[in-house]
Image (cartoon, rainbow, N blue to C red; front, side):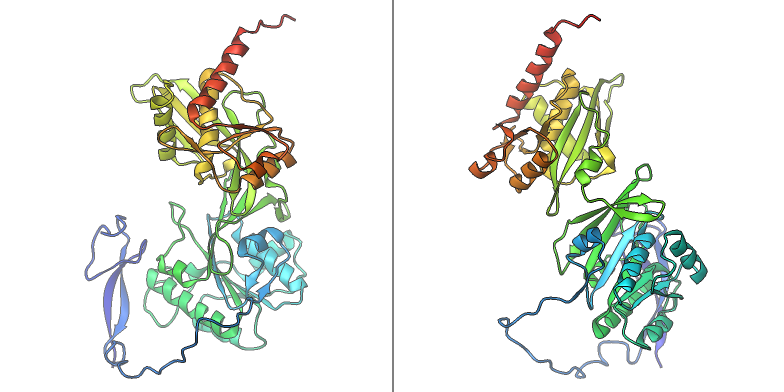
Length: 467
């Protein structure tokens, strides 16, 4: 007879302790350790399994490979992030803030697959069937061929999925609401989330159905539950967005069957999420042309080039410790750029308040934005508006040099497509120089600072127009 013993598990990181603690030693969170019951005794330990294993067949690495079968939704932005559609037999974890549009997007994808003759099952653990139908009617999807269920018990869900024809896509909304009879703990705990995800992953591999799990996020934006759940699934997608903006970004951070760091851009409308075919035009829609401190950065999101407006404001500080407010970029990277400007370029900027914002609520992660950030800072400091038809990209080193970045050709073509005429960057290859744009190559940041400051002095010396 197996006995039940308890262990203490951190609900934030999944660390296990033999006794209760007020603060987790692994992640540092307070009051996140909860007592959970686990099975032990005869038949549960590794000793009982000793000698019961069966040998498996070994195959050589060399051999023919088959491309993974995919279920294409027809939503181009979603298919781009997943690598061409949902792979059959894979498990996808989708996370995002409450109300960001996860359920709306997945319901639209389910309806699109239903129109293609696929068998789609949508299991909701948070809403009743009537509530899901009401949302579908509001989105104009009330007559689509999607099978609904409102259930939270994993064994019941698996029994339902295994009867009848095999489904092509299963959507579980959300994994934190499920519970299984195999463990004795509350729904949403680490043990329940891990065991439920493992059971659904096993069903996905066995049946060949694509399973999408919706996950809640913590206060710092990470998917709630242990990180082991992200290791169990085949793809992890984050749904990002700002409540003050209508667009949403679906970002792939893990994908065993495609490229990572791909993004899909959507716009929230009264009829759900609509695709944005040209994200650069959306982010530059209300750009403040002619204003000092505004620069256009030619960035890359996965394999997609995107033009983004970077805004900087340098103001005299009335405080002994100047303010540093950064939205959409790494604050430590800003500190590095300021230090390079002070030390290598002789610019006295550190005593001012610095406000930096990436327009549209997008988050920039690549170091190629260094040059655009520096240009925006110098433009604001000297009150020198940058040319409205110019883009900037390049990585700034601690020595003050400007290093070339990858995918320069894609960045230049995107800028030319949107009507830009000039680019300021580091060294380019001969092929990229023939892009049709006026290219200004800089070897160090001091050259760019001198040009922006000179244009500011020239502008100040011009006589004011009298009306």
